[in-house]
Length: 435
Image (spheres, helix red, strand yellow):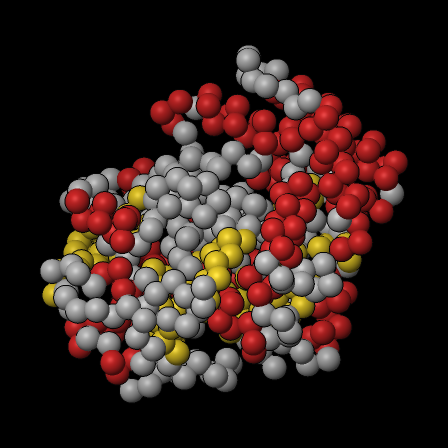
């Protein structure tokens, strides 16, 4: 039995959806453990394309049972619409999806407050998606949130949503001109939550029983390690825990059940929204990576900032989550470059640094110390055998493995499920690669 956590090793958008989809046949249960519909996971195979936001990527594997955990905040309108879209593509969802009754609702007032706050920050905007995720987590921590489990009692749900919405309306008064959600918007949210009632369950109990029966569980993270609320580039972070250690306890399971942690990294680096980004490229190379890599947000469509691989930040992510192996995505995006750089350290002022600063202002002033490698200038797209990669591409991967101290057991050479190199991934409890 293997219980594995998949986490993003950068600022999100690393390709976790594809990796989870690939791994799912080895697991009976797949759990989304953090975030909300501010995250987007894209899965492609054959001629099919799915953009998932709340539903775990495992839903596309017919033998997987899927769960949305207590640590996720759920916009019920968005989830219902996502269920409808996926089911219209002949994928069974309602019969295989359980949503934690302990998960908290994202209300219209949370979205309105998110947008109003962001607008008030002016040039200091954090770059939120405006989906209300941060305010929903605030309400959860402040014990004024509304749990989905109340959908089993319509009267109590309506009362709780009315009280929470009134409090949010008062908070919105601090932002003159900010639109206040209408009663119709609030009613729509309530009705959507009621419609989700048949999907609710105690996933802590269900997963504990699955683990006791020797069934395997895959924990799917949202966002990326550098957006973690505690260890990321605060305040330019998300509002939940993104690290592997958060996965099992947030679902009511002991941390000791985890037998492996797989980190997903792009072969370069991207970031959406504001915040420091030492290796960012604001030149033609950065635009080339954006266009060739289709670096536009799955959820928002926003163009992503692009840059070279940052080994300093990546090493921190490996340490924080105990990442034991790496899935490297979008290698093919680098195919046409004459040279490729890797940030192996920083210079901050007059000091050389090899560790990620815990001060965001220091990181904002960091100048990357680059190592330059020759590009392979050959097509790697769609290659499925490691030995068939261009020699210099293999050398680049080997160098990343050296810098991170962990093996690359998956290499993605295209967006589709089939376009992947698997380097002796099984058994999942012992990561290994071919020589």
